[in-house]
Amino acid sequence: PKRRRRLDSSHDSSTATTPPDDFPPAVAFSTHDISRVPNHISTLDHVAKQIHSAAAEAWDRRFQYKNVFALLLHWQDDDLQVAPEVAALASTFRNVYHYATETWRIPTLKPDWDIKERLIRFLRANDAEGHLVIFYYAGHAMKNPQPGGAPLWSS
Image (cartoon, rainbow, N blue to C red; front, side, top):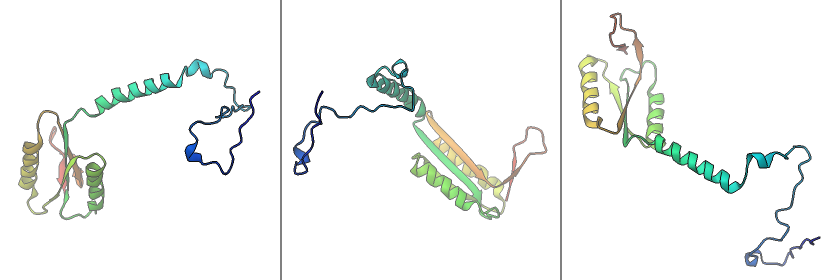
C-alpha cells in the first residue's frame, strides 16, 4: 500500500507542481448505488463533446437574426402607470439582449395619424432581410366590433 505524503506547513505551495499520488482520495458512497454509472457516462471527455455539440447546434439556431429592433409604445397620459414597466423592458432588451430599442409616448390628442406615421417610419428604417422588428404596446385595448378589424387602442 502507498503511504500518504504529509505536506509540511513550511512547504511553499507555489513550488508544488504535482498533487500527491493518492489525490483525489477515493470516496465510497454508501448511500447511493453507483454500480450503473459506467453504463450512462462512458468518459468525461465523451460527455464534454456531447455537451459542446448540443450547445453549438442550439447556438446557431438562437441567432438567426442579424439585427433586432424594438419599439415600445405607451400613452403620454399614462393612467395605467406603465412607464416603469416599459422602461424596465426597454432596459432588458437593450442591456441584456443588445437590441436596438426605442420608446415612444403616444400623444393623447388625435393620436391616430401620429401612431400610423411612427409605426411606418420605424418599419421603413428597420425592416430588412435578417431583421426582427418587435412592437410592444402598453395600454388599454379592446376587440374591434367590426369583424376582422384591428384591435382598438385607447388611453
